[in-house]
Image: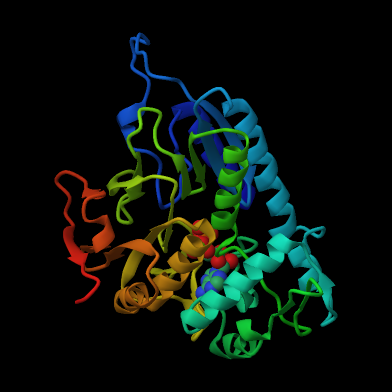
Length: 362
Ligand code: ADP
Ligand code: MG
């Protein structure tokens, strides 16, 4: 099922020459497709499609260093997938999960991501919990064998969910996880990979590029003409349409929602983001959360956590910690953007949504 999804998406991307596979944060606004006449003086990008981290990634770069930069970005993404994959038996996460409570030596990257996970876990009151993995498995999201677990089963599994039990010893470079627990970095690994791939590209001399890691978008610099990248935020209620456009310069935009990965049973929809308090799909009244900021891993982790926490708690977090901006889409049809986006987010023409701006001091 997972390969099916990725392959279908890849074919879509290849046939339509669009970011068909883009996840929630969508692709770019249509504005920059090459003109049919082919006479334009616009610089043409080099592109690359990468199948990694269980998704389809579309990378594009401009300038003389574009090829070199794309090669380095792909290398970096593939390398990080090799460390973070929960399902590959040669990954570091696999080693941690199967160490039976014994300390496991990990790379600096895995350590860094575990430290961020712990910090975000604490700041979000456990809404982000990387040890939720056994619960995600019970619902069938890791295999495609979807099912609704019994209450008793979920209660028993929740005993194994506690991000504070993950112990990373930075000096020793080891991670210890109690026997029977399992972690997965699916909530922030793609965001981290985007930011690291962007670093690799900048080191290769690339100054203008856009990386779409299955809906986690990472911008490098601006468009070749010097104006900000324009990235579409998907409409959670519409397969095709987009909700609006957000402008990015050297930033990531990461969306979490319940509309991309779900199954239905008895008329009820169940999605892949779990509330660690209940072991059930998060149901906070939000349809999607987009986090925009300089640190892709943080944006990714927060988008997952805020989808669990809901609008008011997300805005409270933003007011307390700052350092990023938000687009919150509610079931009620309201779109709330934080004030830093007031001039860089535009709702689509004729949108059925109502836009409001959240102020830092309400
Ligand atoms: P996507 O991977 O679709 O972009 P997210 O970044 O929101 O979406 O991450 C969702 C993944 O994170 C799930 O597939 C699951 O593996 C894991 N997950 C689900 N709920 C939580 C949670 N509350 N905290 C941490 N990880 C979670
Ligand atoms: Mg996330």
